[in-house]
Image (tube, rainbow, N blue to C red; front, side):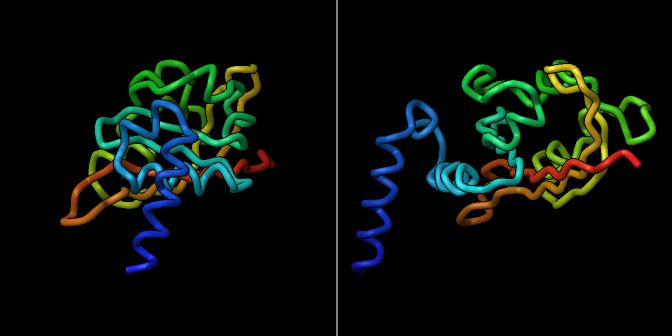
Length: 152
């Protein structure tokens, strides 16, 4: 019981410190956002509604724009902002993007893709995405981790 009270107190501190995101999303997404903010690997988080809910500082470097500048947006809008291709340069549909697969199909997905960052350069990345499922198999969204790959 004491652990539950401590957990609620910690969540309350996170909720109080985080702006509008914190009041609009399930606690599981709030905790994933908090966790991602401490990591050095680029991470994206989308909610059950398909809105890009957060990406961390390392992802900002890969994208060429801070999350504060971009804000929350539909996953589909993300596809229109970046030129996303397979690793050979052929355009891919948003439904082939690992994060979209994890969100739409509720299953893990992995892939390698290229995109043009907002600050200009093309980047080659490996992406691994997993769905976020809560209690009673409630679909809460998806999270993706990116690794930049050297284009050898």
